[in-house]
Structure formats: C-alpha cells, structure tokens
Amino acid sequence: MIAALFPSRRRRPFDTLSEEEILALAIGAEEEDARIYQAYAENLREQYPGSAKVFEDMAEVEQTHKNMLIEMFRTRFGERIPLIRREHVDGFYVRQPDWLVKNLPLDKIRAQTEAMEDQAHRFYTLAASRVGDASTRRLLGDLALAEQGHGEIARALGEKHVGEEGRAEEDETAHRQFVLTYVQPGLAGLMDGSVSTLAPIFAAAFATQDTWSTFLIGLSASVGAGISMGFTEAAHDDGKLSGRGSPLKRGLASGIMTTVGGLGHALPYLIPHFWTATLLAGLVVFVELWAIAFIQNRYMETPFLRAVMQVVFGGSLVLAAGIIIGHG
Image (cartoon, rainbow, N blue to C red):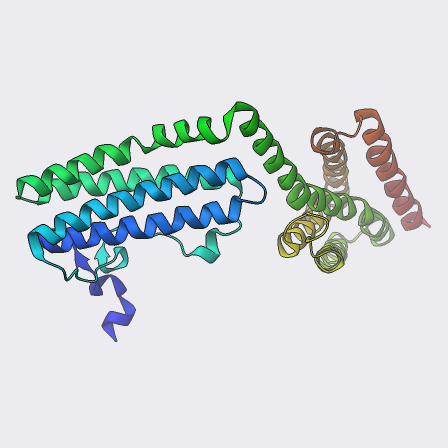
C-alpha cells in the first residue's frame, strides 16, 4: 500500500548501483534512444524525408554505442545482462512513450532531441565517476563526450541530408501545418465567439441593465458556441485528405477560442455598475476585433484593409444591432 502511494520508494538510488548494473542501465538507455530516433524517422518520413534520414543515422549511432557497451559488459561480467531500466532508478530521466510523441511538430522533436542528448551526457559523466575499472571508465567518458557532441553530429547530418533549402522547405511545411491545425480553426472560433455573441450580450445588457443577468447570458452563449464550434470543426473533416491535421486538435482550438472570444466581453459584466461594465466591454470588443484583423493579416495573409472591413466593420454592425435591439 505504501509503495503504491510512494512509487519512488520502489526505485533504486543511483549511488547504490553496482558497475554491472550501471553498464546494464546504459545498454538499455542506448537501445531505447535508438528506438525513439527510429520512431521519429518513421513519423517524419512522409512530410520531412531529409530530417527522417537524420534520425535514422542518429539511431545507428545509438546502436553503435549500445554494441560497444555490450562488448564491455561481456568482457567483464559475462553474457547475462541484468534487466534494469531508467524507470527503475530514482531521479533518472524517463522517456515519453511513442504514442505521446507521435504527433509532435518538427521543432518540438528537434528540441526533444537536444534534451535527450543533454540528459545522456550528464548520465555518462556521473556514471564514469562511479566506476573503478579503468577501461569501463574510459568508455563511459568517451560516450559522455560523444553525447555532448551529438548536437554537432545532428547539425552535420542535417546539412548532409537536408541542406539549407531542404531545411527551409521543412520549416515552411511545419509552419503551414501549424496554421492549418491550430491557427485557422482557432481564428474561425475567435471570430465566431467575438462577433456572434455581441448582439445577444449587448441586447441583454441594454434591455435589462442588470450586469449579473447579462454575464450569465454571455457565459451561456460563449460556452454553447464553443461546444458547437468545437464539435463542428472536429466532425466535418478528419484531416486525412485535406492534410489539416488531427480533428481533435482542430476541434479543441476552435472550441476554446470561440469560448474565449465570447467571454472577453462577457466578463466585464461581473462589475456591478452597469455603465462601467458596458464601457469596459466595449473596449474589450474594440481590442478583440483589431486583434482578429491582425491575426488574419499575419497568418492568413489577408490584406489588412480587407481584414479590417470584414472583422471590425462587420463586428461593429453586429454590436450596433445588439444595442438597438436592447433599447427597443
């Protein structure tokens, strides 16, 4: 029961590992990293073939390190390698499983790779200080230097397999995928939430002049619109043919931003004083509409004046309609 509540107690402190166990741990770590790099290569092969080749080569490097460690282990301790993994050692870094890293964007994979190599360098440096056998210590020290230099290796492999033009093309592809998966549905949601909720919120505000009732109407309209937009975005396109990416990610982006867009001018009505809340809500609307126009221009390459006409002018008409209806 206590072990279930405190899982770290089931792990071995690194200082208690024998030299045999340290080598076994290093073998398992290199084998796991090689599989991760190979998985990265498989996931990237279709969209980023140059980077996929880089990770294939890095997987081969990790396999070479593993074979060197196995030979050292066989020389010193025989054929039977103890089963000890990262998760068995207290404070040791743990890699994420494949299903959590499968859909990482390219820049996140590159950052993850740098973190992996830095962790491996620190492990080998510490491991080298813990062994007394000269040949083992030398091998671990060499591997520490190799892991420290993997950043340079990755860059060299990148130049070999990707090149500057290929890297630019891959970055452009990654940017385009980011826009299709997150920016486009998020922007659509923000526009819908910001504009479509204007009329009901301001109509309720001027009709009742009750800030709390107005807030509840705005909250319900925003959340309802967010749920509707999220499900619509996720359901109408699975992303396989369009290349727009995961429907879950797109649905979340659209739904969350729709809700945020509506809540922006609903939250000021938590202020009890009607005119203070209304003036603040109007200011929020002004900022929201101009922010949407900027995002359209920045990411969707919509001419700025056209974006202003579509969003600011259109939103102003909806706002005016709400106020007129509320006064009526």
